[in-house]
Amino acid sequence: MSALTLMHLTSVGPDKPPASVEFGPHLTVVYGASETGKSYIVEAIDYMLGATKLKTISQADGYTHMLLGLHTADGEIFTLCREMGGTKVDVFEDDLRSLPAVAPNKTLNLKHDPKAENNLSRYLLKIVGVDGRRVLKNARRVLRTLSFRDLAHLCVITDTPMADERSPVLASRQTIKETEDKSVFKLLLTGEDEPEGPTGASNVEKKVGKGKIELLDQLITQAQSRLEIASSESELHDQLRRLEESLVNASAAARDLVADRSALIEQERQLQVRTTMNRERSGELSTLLGRFGLLRQQYESDLDRLRMVAEAGSLLGYFFREGPCIFCGAAPEQQQPDHQTAETEQLQAAVAAEIRKTTELHADLLTTMDDLEEQLRLLEGDHASLIAGSSALTCELAALDERLAPLTEDTKAILSTQSKVQADLAIHAQVQQFEELRASLSSMPAVPEPARPDGIPASNLADFERTMHEILASWQLPGANHVTYDQRTAEISVDGSPRGSRGRGMRSVIHAAFTLALARYTAERDLPHPGFVVLDSPLLAYREPDEDFVMPRNVVGHFFQSLHDELKVQIIVAENVNPPQDLGEQATLHPFRTAAAERVGFYPASAPLG
Figure 1 (cartoon, rainbow, N blue to C red):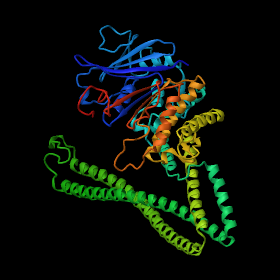
Figure 2: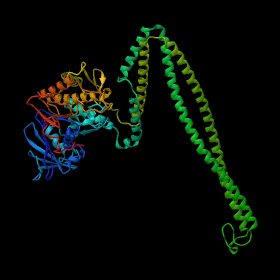
Figure 3: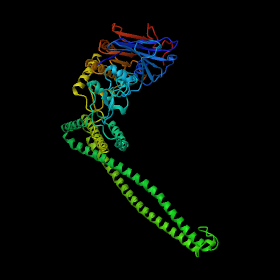
Figure 4: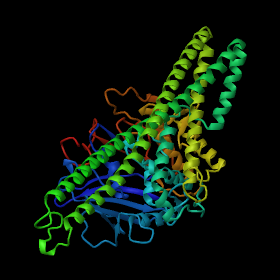
């Protein structure tokens, strides 16, 4: 695969001295005091590779364009030029380091468009040799083409995602794009496109079931977030079996007590479910009764008014027998004999009919309300029974706990773990029910889980884990530095501890190792990758007052020496801590505002950068 090498980043503007930093072909370290523009350089590189925005700082006032010089593996040089806040990128097939004085060779849009040629993403993908490659868009196996931003997320790591708790594989940092992120990672490890497959439901089916499916997805996500143990359901069953065997071996006397306790916990859970359903139904019935009560009042009010109308009509017909008709207004000469009597009878008949209709509706409503009130009474009685049963179970559990109290601390720990496993198994069962219900909402073929569409072959994954282990070991971090990757959660664990559970400092170090391992792995196998890595604050030397992580000095030295010895990938590091001074001629060093430093920061300004 063709690789890109970054040559320089330069900011220019009318009547402004260029602000520039040169990048070496192998290792470049920009280091020094905080707030001198080191992170700004990383963000500006990302901006030039298609990021939507670059933060505004006062030192950049008057600077109108950003330039990024690159060359390909074939030696072709070009410069990307983007106006500050601009939505297009100009390409100059030359090493440009000043304000453009000639027209660009190309002008490209920022947004990736697989059907158009004039966008930055496809321009860079063609150079890397992966234009048109396909990844999964969602769990329904809908495919989309690879975007260069998919790759940029994995090679240009700014300070925020560097220490983020989310897995480095989930580089977009958007939950809705987890399937896409995992598919991109799979493409880099295997070099293979996602295969064609069933794309799920039709548009009509999607519209019909979209709301329910999205709700079930949220319920599944919420349920999975409550899992306490990072193990599969089968692993949990195995663990539960081992725990039960340990309990039997530890104390035969406690075996029956433990079984009884487990049964009581399950009964209590079932009672809680029934209680929740009971309260929900009671609420629904109470709401209906309230609404029906208002309707009953309306019916009764209508009946009263109709009786008043009937009585008033009779009186009017009796007292007013001469002159214009009080009902229809007809003059005496236009009235038939007994006109007033006929009109009175018609009014009485109409009112009587409306009274009969309203009376029937009122009677039906009362019957319905009686039925609902009876249901509500039954539910209240059932609720009282449930509460009593729950209280009884609580008492039984308390009694069992008192009998179990004398057990050893080891047995208590086993019981605690067993409870967590049982709770997780219950959540897994709930998730399975949700997923089965979700599948029944549409007729589309069943699809794999989003986190593992087809899975990364074990050999590829083992090679990557070994590569990352070698990098961590070369930095001489404490421990065996054994690396594992969970395809379901996309979590990376080192020595059995998930990265997301580690402190901020170790998360940054592991993220840096992941990024470098991915670059080395792809370079050694001629697989897709831009060919460079940009890291912001991997050692986390600048820390907040409450941050308790400080990287050991020997690790810092081995870290930089390892990067110095890495000749397959171009590496750019922005860091507060000073690198060793014996990195050699292959390293390019840029000290900012340090002792004997020639410059105060990226921009030639006396005040610190914001």
